[in-house]
Image (tube, rainbow, N blue to C red; front, side, top):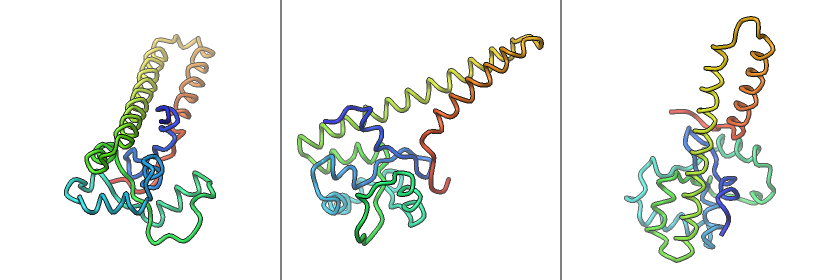
Length: 167
């Protein structure tokens, strides 16, 4: 089982949601992507639109260019599905193997870790803003330092570029 840090690399931001692609989930669960999608389709009521959606051609092309991997080659009949955190959790009720349970636990931990990191970044930005308001107008150097740190934090926060269309 991969650690949450390794699993967090499989989490992408698409349509404003953090998601894991069906191909990555299938690889983790040790099943064919087609089998995973079939299991979901057989249990469609358990997967509303906010749990799973299929990528558009544009979203897939954008994601593919970001990831730059050769493993996505070959002929595809359709575009991959994206599972939100809730969709990944629901998969454990559809794929009932012990491996599926272990994978889901790891992925849930990765989602939680990413939320914690985002909260820490926001908290640091708030503190920097407060400090910036207290800086005397003669302390230009301190203000510049705060701006530089703020810029670094924002760059870290945007390291996972969002793709797709916002709703």
